[in-house]
Image (cartoon, rainbow, N blue to C red; front, side):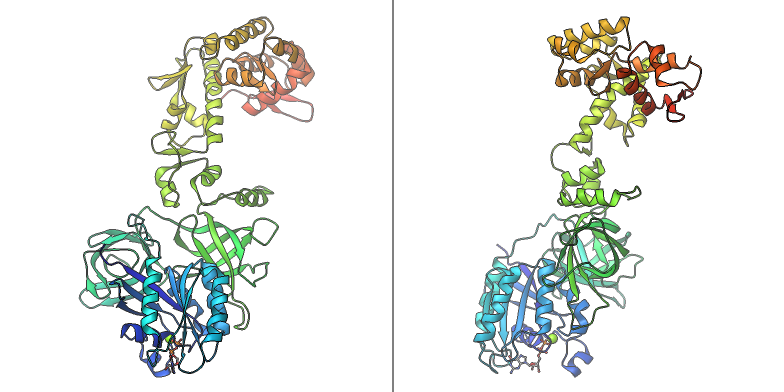
Length: 599
Ligand SMILES: Nc1nc2c(ncn2[C@@H]2O[C@H](COP(=O)(O)OP(=O)(O)O)[C@@H](O)[C@H]2O)c(=O)[nH]1
Ligand SMILES: [Mg+2]
């Protein structure tokens, strides 16, 4: 296999020897700024690379350890899958070691090794054991720990071999994944325009690609990786893109595959407090993802703080997918307090509005059971296009219900129950028309695409000339039912032909063998109209009832309606409520209703 490139970030307290170690391993200078060299302090992210003994290449993103530059540290570590954690043998575990570890844990970094450096200045063993325990506890796995010196070169061969083992164990990212390159540097080069650099975590970029920056199209004119011109790069890699487009790129913005991400400033998330942090979260925080750091407002949706659902309002839109992890930091907190407060796992990038009373609590409950997948998304959004699911980061599971559409299974089965009712009602209201126009059914069911309506049509319904009809007349609605059910339903319809509003009682239904399942099938087939639990009438009975009620003096009471329809309260009450729902009648006050004008 051709050698791959890997990217490893440094982490650890200021002055513990991170930059010195990167310099010793690569022969390159990670501290590029004059000010950095003068002060001997890393301020900006540094980049350096080398070839490991195996031939694999590794690029380092060297981060500042000073507490004032935590934001820069997070921008460096954000898109990188692995870390080289540095602790000085002569100083041991320090506050910034702890803060960086909490950050790595919160970001979910799971691969790393420990270098106890400055081993020429003190016995490294006690620090090595203490720091390794802390890294293992933080979920970095069975980290290798090595004593080294960036000054004498002690232990560096061992460290190179350990880096080889670390990168060999890293999962290979998907080369077909959509591109999201978080910019960490942007500058203009005289004569060749705009250049941005970043860590490409997955996917592939080629010269000539059309990508997007904040919704604006950009074109890749040229591509470099580790200072070499290349035609294409596959993640993980450090890359520099020379871009054409009307853009002014900045750190924290991302170059993305068009249509593959949802740019959103609103996200519903699950909050997990960082180790040692206590809720409730302040309402104003800074959210970090990739190289971005964005002020945000946090609105808790449920009651409990731990593992709770919240809505984030970001001060600018970010390209996000479900399952993305944002780190929430308190920018106002003093440097001796814990500033990394929580992880926010994205569960929805197009969260529904919360208008009604209690909507937030209901949403919290739904999010408590949600995972970052298509099924959870569909429970909220009911119907989504392929492309929408992809832009939300959830490959569709299961088959589409219609060309390019996916549906929540419960919602889809409710729709397939409603369509025959809607068609039957339409036929009753428009007896002279040859069926219900597909467009009218689409409107009635509130569907976004006519293809969804035709996908719902199944016998005894058929579509012809843009209209949906029930094959044959009403009784033919029993055609699709098992023979005994069809017979029983026909018997019921015979009863109802003489007394249309005297719904059969429980005894009659039982005698005919019509239990809840049989009734549901008959209703689905359009052979019966369900008014309420256990109350069924012939299809079209509701329209007939409305026509009779329209002849009463308006408004009328339940008991006037009951005698006009020749039925009992058991039927009249739910039938009137059904007519209310259909908009054929409406309540005037506690006891009166009136018919609503047609239309
Ligand atoms: N003796 C000794 N000094 C070191 C070693 N590594 C770094 N230093 C010194 O420690 C100071 C801080 O190193 P630097 O790499 O800038 O630390 P960083 O802030 O973690 O990047 C510098 O003065 C280095 O020369 C080492 O292994 N041995
Ligand atoms: Mg440094």
